[in-house]
Length: 84
Image 1 (cartoon, one colour):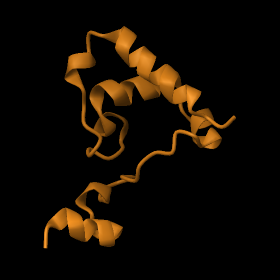
Image 2 (image 1 turned 120 degrees about the horizontal axis):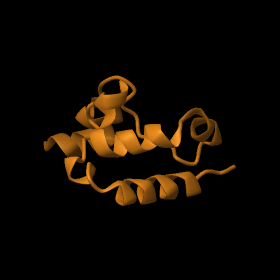
Image 3 (image 1 turned 90 degrees about the vertical axis):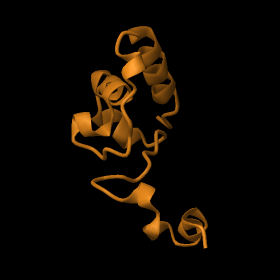
């Protein structure tokens, strides 16, 4: 059976969910929103999870290094998802 088909039935075996704090972030969580700075969000967007001590499964986006306006727009969008 294909690995992803197996992962759909058993999420704990999905390679994408392994590693330190590798679960998908709930951007609607107002407590998480309060706990992170705008700079932290933009750093993750540009340099990936490993840059902030999180899962390396969140890849870096080196093409955004020189595009601060794009990283800022993504951060603004993430902030707008908050339930607070």
